[in-house]
Length: 65
Image 1 (cartoon, rainbow, N blue to C red):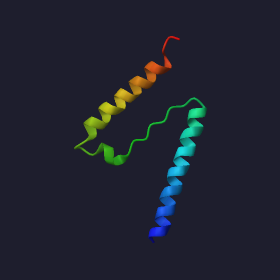
Image 2 (cartoon, one colour):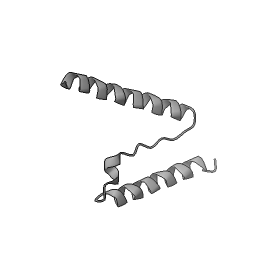
Image 3 (spheres, one colour):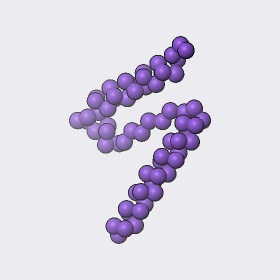
Image 4 (cartoon, one colour):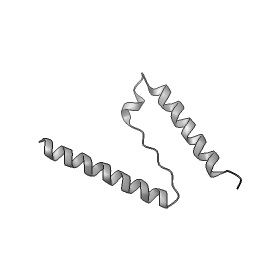
């Protein structure tokens, strides 16, 4: 049932954006990591990217102003 799944996926994406906005408004950072990004062929690249992102967030949050 293509119509059902298209609607469901679109609604899920909308809900995810709403939740991310709520978390951001509460001062939280959120990072989405998909299971497929942890497959052996790309796991190392994903983890390096995650480490870079976490370091960037940390430095921004602790910047002297």
